[in-house]
Length: 304
Length: 294
Image 1 (cartoon, each protein chain N blue to C red):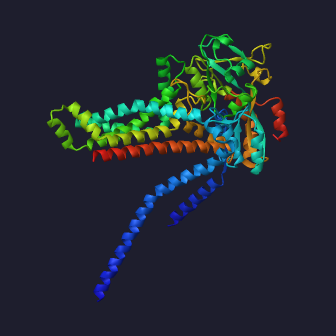
Image 2 (spheres, each protein chain N blue to C red):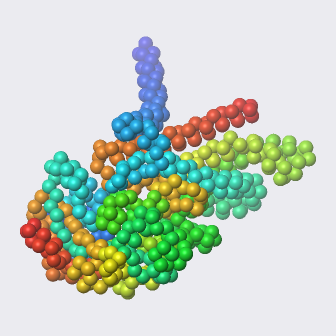
Image 3 (tube, rainbow over the protein chains, first blue to last red):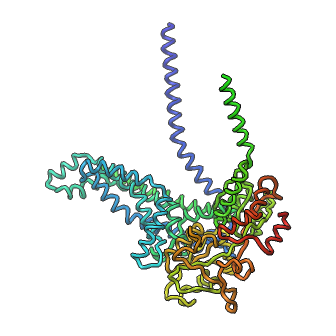
């Protein structure tokens, strides 16, 4: 009888512990969601009054951003949205082919010993602070671009694109490489057995099979590029004009927030419109991630 | 055991001494930061019981921090705006203005550039984007590339008010992060023009940096262009874009803050102002400080 009671007690205790652990993990899982919702509503609450009092047109039809103007204070976001998209697009044009090719090389072609050297080096590249990369943009990439392109200076969108490409490469390479390595050996064996050579196998079998991981890596790299602040703030010249080409100086959304938040009076219309920029930026990265998820989902279904 | 107790007591006294120290936080203008840093270093050497922290961020940032009552002294290379004074009042902060030095705000170009002098009106038109080629002001046939500061900068605001005559900057002007970055930009850009506090045009050898030219500036087309590097021109007011460098405190200063300001305005402090290539307080500003009790 006593024995029976003891076992029963032990079972109950174990149950409680199980539930407690489950709840603990649940809270941790929800934490990210709560933080995300918090950020979303903060941006919305702070930004909405500016949108209401200045109107949608002021922000999205007007091209000029100049909240401290003596003549006419204006809050147009278009030129900085274009700037951000341009710099990010340029970075992806450089980083995606380079990243996928080097991931394929490391995963499929390189000698194991070479791989052991290259992989950690790429990971170190990821650890370089953005200020340092921005500094290189000013003293190395800028003057070099000026010389090559014949412009008088190199503080422009191309400079930012090159630097952001360097910064997003580690993400793209290491995740793509993992995806390529994860492709089952049978796929490759089957392809080789059918008479395909190594190149054909890599390009037509291995890389397509790893595509979901590669797409994910590109999207993550792009997220990093869109949100990067210090590098573009230092290397792109920050002229607020609507950029006409990649050789024009540009000012991105992140740079604008970083430059102006410190000097605005809290609660001011200028302060609130910076939150509108933040909100638009948030939407942009959200869309990038959403697209990535949809693409991944589709791809995985096709594979199955 | 006795030894341990003694050690504990001694270290306690030491800790209490540190906490009894006066701590002054100074924030603001990028133009003033090197100067105020130097001033505070020398001051702290003489007064080891006072700790001073100097940070930058721009005049606007310093003034915003003073309004929020987060710091004791705000450095500013422009006077406080009406809007800021109202915000300060709302927060119960009473800004008190002191002039610590004079700056001959310098317009700089690349040494490769043939132009040696401009009028205030020409400079204004260049930075408003109305003059876009150097040949329009007697230089080579090349597009002008503009270097200025960001909206948080006092130099940006001062220049906009007194050189651009309250008109907007060209949206093509590159907004740099500080005086030093403008100097680097113009050094690397043969078609560049920029404006910086005069303390920033000199290299380690106290000569104007190689590859850089400081322009002579004329008040209008009829007057002779004047060089800001000559102290007499700035002191006498002949140089048209000289300006005061300010510090703002909350209320009539007392204690360590007052003592530091007295040091800054005294012979030793003003000598440091000159060593850092700015000019000592003189003329009208001297009277203004006197009125403020210094």
